[in-house]
Length: 179
Length: 179
Image 1 (cartoon, each protein chain N blue to C red):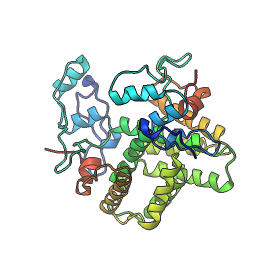
Image 2 (tube, one colour):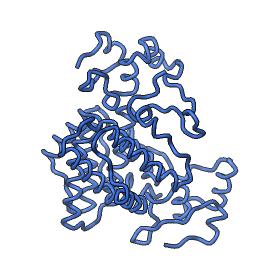
Image 3 (spheres, rainbow over the protein chains, first blue to last red):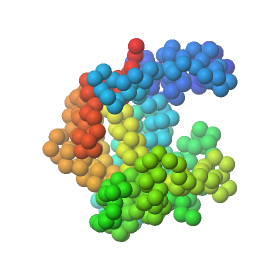
């Protein structure tokens, strides 16, 4: 791993590289990845910081012979994170109130494998450590939903984001905000 | 399962219900779910179809004592689908070029459990059937990425969406659209 000398001045975090030496798309923010691969320049980043417009970094023309599909780039670490929390919390919302031993075992396996195959390596590794220290609580939907909320808050803390009040996990991920 | 008599006229598909008799949030589109739960009316749907504005169905105030978190409702079937494909395709993009037997077995288990725990029941059941008929190809990244693309196209076909040209799977999910 290495990072360019002036990355910090630009608000670019340490660039994460894949084993093949290329910047890792699913481990870096879109902006960091675009900077590391020369898609955007220091000047562009300054423009982003100032809120002034830059040319779209990735052209959005339709794919060859396609009417519907545009040339959308693979998700970066932030979009992938949002997507994955969407899925994981929704899974807890549908977990049985009184799961069978088989359902508990399957969910435990699912989370373990998730921590091996999640595309952002450092995120995967952090999650793997988390479930070793704080084993998933799988005896009921309520327990599992709250555990996942706490797992998410662990990541929020690392990213210096606000803690979510887990008393509201069911409203956010299961029932909605009834008036 | 049941559906209101005038659903079709409104462009509402058959509402899917949970075992507890309530409309299933992660199995219906946001609009269908809101209609089924009385959050939006036939008039609102007509407005949506006509492109005229309606009042926001779900208030977006900040959660009690929170600065950052808004009262966002749980994702419906479409957002959950987009999120999950984001994750699944990204997983294929990071799958080893030459996986070990253990890695192949883990991924097979992951997909099997995924087909049991995916929050949208009918989607999960369709995916379970799909992997029984067309077993996941896990001998290489290329094979797995293409298999996932074909799995996605199976769903596209059901939803009458355009087929994605799987020759482009690596550009869409791994490398981006280099000029």
